[in-house]
Image 1: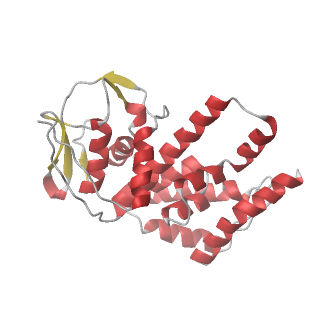
Image 2 (image 1 turned 120 degrees about the horizontal axis):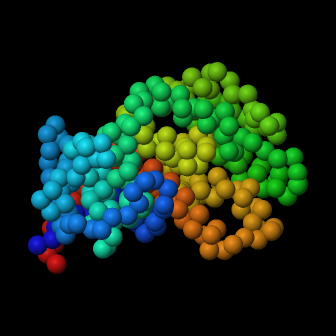
Image 3 (image 1 turned 45 degrees about the vertical axis):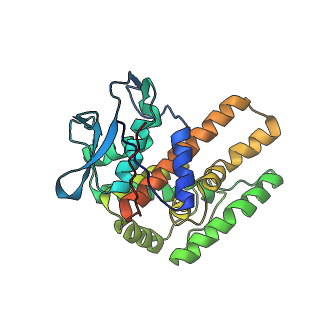
Length: 278
């Protein structure tokens, strides 16, 4: 008997999960592959309302040796699906949700929540969409048309001032803006903050990360906006097509994983479990 677990979720999250499971990315693990050593994947209730992942009769553990536990069933199902979809060889670099859970559980850099918030806000000072070019005119126009709407949205949404600049130092972010965003980030729990910081580092943008998590833009839009100048240059000078596609899909997969991790860690999802026999 093989137990498969299914989850009902909003269409946008379902689409992101499909994207996440369909794209491989070699960006995380030192040990990137290993021969598969199990047949069945299941989920069980653990102590304190946590959920555990079982590989046959073995309980999954983190790289640090801790018992792998997820704070809710939705997140546990996402992780179980990653392990269940592996073939003869385990490709750890494709298991983004598992990696993010391991990071939250092991906290390998021993950072506090305040330290994580400070690190995330550093990206606001060098935010991708705040740096503008002065030429060529066509790229200037593209940046204004594509980035300004998102920048205006976040300023209105959080009642802050960010601005943009062509100066190499970037815009000067008001302290009031930093305080507002620090307070907002403080509202996230440690797990969801782990995912949000990860999204920020992938997009190199606090603005795009907030817009994505607030569902103002999609994963695909966030990734394209973060790569706007690169895509412009490719349009003019060309590229190695397969390499471009791989980079694009890898970034989408990582960004989708982070966004799903934030939502699964910070809200209750409607979950339906179904057992099927092969």
